[in-house]
Image 1 (cartoon, rainbow, N blue to C red):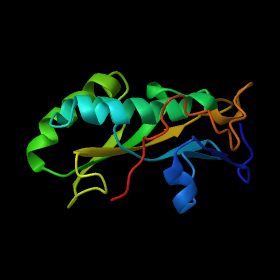
Image 2 (image 1 turned 30 degrees about the horizontal axis):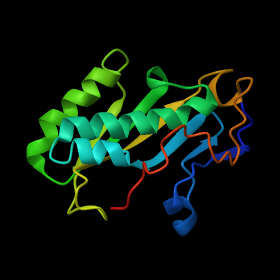
Image 3 (image 1 turned 120 degrees about the horizontal axis):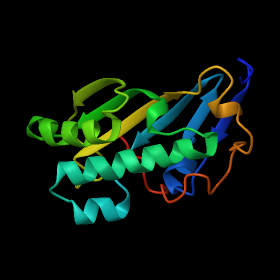
Amino acid sequence: MTSSREVRRQRSDSPWEEAIGAARAVAAGDRVIVSGTKPAPGGIGAGEDEPYEQALSAFGAALAALEPFGLGAADVVRTRMYLTHARDADEVGRAHRELFGAAPPAATTVLVAGFVDSRVLVEVEIEAWAGAGGGAGRDGADGADDADGADGADEGEGAR
């Protein structure tokens, strides 16, 4: 188990993180929190008007940010889904169920006015729990300020 006073930050190569002074993911004790994550650039273009595809892309990028800490979908205990249109709730929910249905986390869906990139329909946040003796303290998961640890999630976050 990680010391309750230890905080480790995982960075990606996203210019947004540097511009606003944010980390991709932060491990504090047994908890790992992933910043707001929008669909990866390819996930927006391919699914510009498809909330299901955007949700899969955004959750995929957020889950990739957990990998350096040795965590995955089964370790996620909370999700937040921010939508620009209420009509997209069912499709985003379908993507959420496919990814997390085996180990459902607490989940919140919030309607927002929009995102910096107007093509974005959904942004997600996830929180994971490493559990007693696992996760953020596992061997080989140092992740501290690692610029390439997000494994392709470089454009994953957005602003509300």
